[in-house]
Image (cartoon, rainbow, N blue to C red; front, side, top):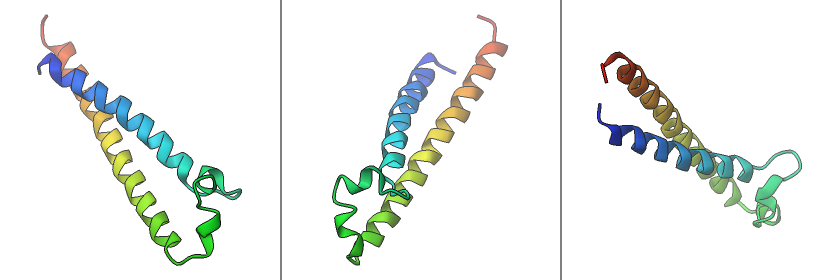
Length: 86
């Protein structure tokens, strides 16, 4: 596989790692978490907050799947790169 594939996977891995960290921190925990800083605690009694939480869950799962695919793709690339002679 070409070298640009590895650089693309590493760039995607870094971007998705940062996004995944931010999305997880935005989830509401027992104490409110960082989501309460952005109005999550104030609007928790409104009907729209459950939709926002569901969308946040969906985005977190989607970014997690892309992150996992980057890990697997980079691992497969490394496995193939080690087998081929330099």
